[in-house]
Image 1 (cartoon, rainbow, N blue to C red):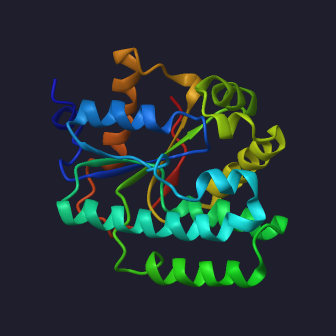
Image 2 (image 1 turned 135 degrees about the vertical axis):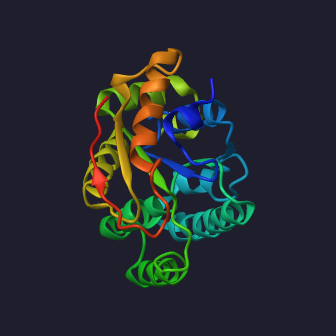
Length: 230
C-alpha cells in the first residue's frame, strides 16, 4: 500500500514529532517513516556531552546543554531541507526555547544573562523568514501518570532517577506551550487513542496527516493550530 498516494502526502514533506520525554516520539517517528518510505532524523541523546552532567546539576549545565541542542537541531534542520524533504523528525527545535530554556530561567537554574543570550541566538537562527519550518508538527500528549509510567519502564537510568516533580513541571509546561504554538501547522494526538502495532491505528493517523498537509502547495502558507482527536 502506498500511503503517500492514498492520502495525498507530498514525497518531500517534513514532519516533526513533539512531546515530553516518555510520550513515544521515537516510536511514532519510526512508524510514520516506514509507512511513508521517508527518512528519519533522531535526537542524538547518546552522544550528547552535557546530558549526564545536566541531570546531576541543572544550574551548572543548563545553558551549555541548550546551546548544544540548538546547534545540533539547527544543523539537522538545514540538512533535511538541503536533502529535499521526505523526513520524519524526532523532537522539534521549538521546544528548546519555548519549554526548556524558559523553564530553567524561571526556576533560577539559568541566569538572566545566559537566558537572554540564548534567546537572542535562537531568534536570530530560527525565528526568521529564511528558516525552513516543517510542514507539520505532530504533538503527542497523554496523562501525567501514563507518561511517568513509560519513563519508569524505558530504563534510561538518568531519567528514572529524576524527581517526579520535574516531570510534573514538564507536563504542565508542554500543555501550555502547545496551546499557543503557531510556527507551523499542528496535529495533536493522545497516546491513549492509538496502538501503532495495529495497522488501523496507523492508517487513521496517516489519514489525519494527509488531510492536514496533503493539499499544501507552499510551506509559507499561514499556519493553523488545529486539535485533531483520534
